[in-house]
Length: 144
Image (cartoon, rainbow, N blue to C red; front, side, top):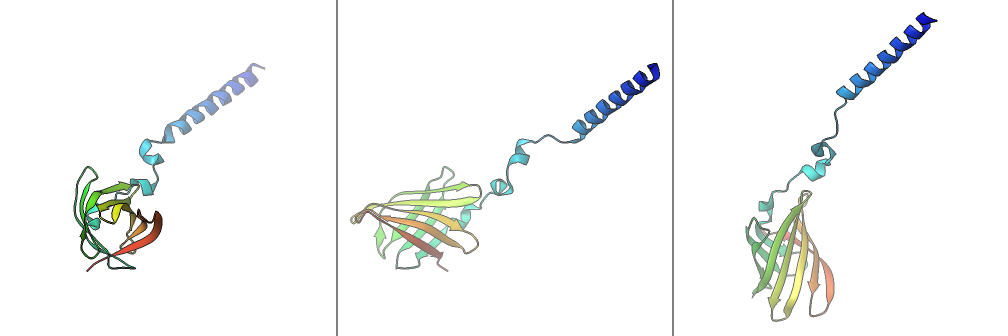
């Protein structure tokens, strides 16, 4: 009886040691490991700089500078210069986005909300035409 009890205690202790060894060798999830690979990527914002031509008309966006606080220097032409009231860029989860609000005659708050598509080197998104109150799908290609 004493031998059986002794064997049971030894087996129990051995099982406990194996459990502790397994816990020590399995790494705990760290915050960096819980972030998906897409979230770890950062986009090169400088790809936004340049001249962009709308694919369906003679409208052009000219991005000349990206500021670190999310603002950018941009011009808009149809084909003459139209006043840009606000121009901003952002990057989240490796995706670059652009917002441009126009403030000029016939452009009282019209705006572009665009996403950079690196695989095709396009700015694509929506154009809100404030006078009509309508929204259109648009694309801009890089002017070479």
